[in-house]
Amino acid sequence: MTERGTIRNRESAAQIRDFGGLRWGTITPTDIDGAVEFQDKAYVLFELKYGESTVPYGQRLAIERMCRDLHKAGKPVLGMIARHNTNPSDDIRAADADVVEVWVDWGSGPVQWRRPNKQLTVKEAIDIFLKNYGIVC
Image (tube, rainbow, N blue to C red; front, side, top):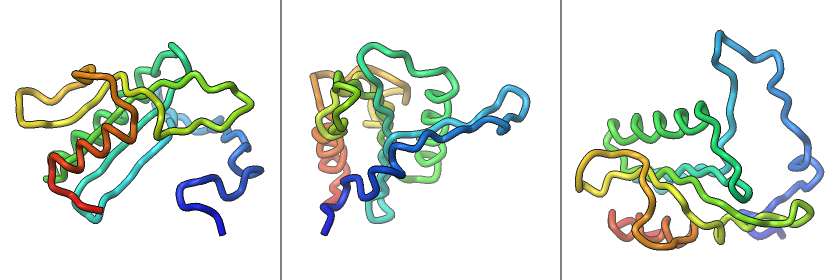
């Protein structure tokens, strides 16, 4: 039996997704590395980047708009950009990636992308978010 959250079909996971031919003006598809829905109570979206590689404008905007729309619908939502330095031949452990930007409404001012107040991994940031909203899994 495969542990939940781990890769089940390595060959399929390694396939490149070609979004060629999917364009509407300047709009093209993007991907999001992680999305979690917690018991119809809250959402987390995150993107993982290697080293100092930049997040394309459209990808950041898509994550931000999805977060904003979920927030407007009354759901707590956490959006994150996280970085790792994993060797390309090794699996990336998303839980351990370092969060460098968050989009979250803590009720203290405008909602926007900002740096975390302290160094956090993806797992730590999600745990804090869930605790803040009283969500028990």
